[in-house]
Image (cartoon, rainbow, N blue to C red; front, side, top):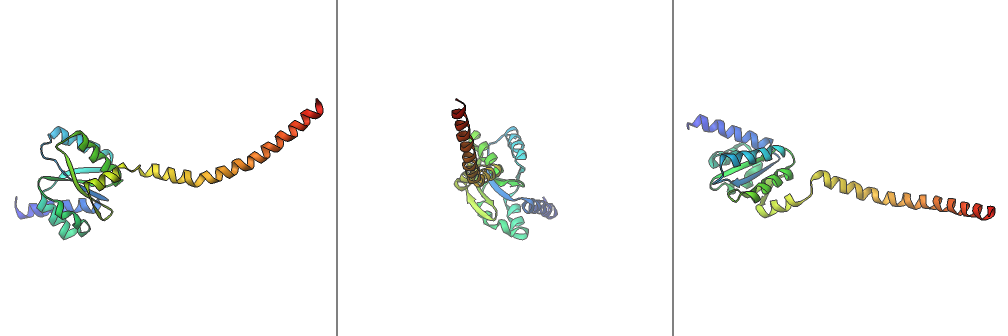
Length: 174
């Protein structure tokens, strides 16, 4: 490949890095085309994509245009594919690690989310967290719970008063 072709690939890689909220690196050696297609379909559901990029081109794209991903450059060793997460980075991480469980030839090696580099074990911890929607629902439930308790106590006073008045009425009529 000539120099202009490599520069074009570097620019494409730099654009993908700039658009992504998170990047995950994974070894893909030994996977069939069918398995890679299955991985890409699963990642697409999580607003992510898996691309195979030459290590030197990816490192140059990071060093020249996307220094925010510089912490990942040490992890580009061997045949490594790049998962670019454009949406929820935790969902993409979950999809990649779920695929890894089913395919022994696929190994997540490192990643970078929100400017911080993570190892595979740290990515596993992030993937085990509930989704953003579930966490928001839990927070809202926690905020609403005391108000519901107070409301039930106040309604209980009214209910008790009505029950006492009904008991008095029943006693007088009997």
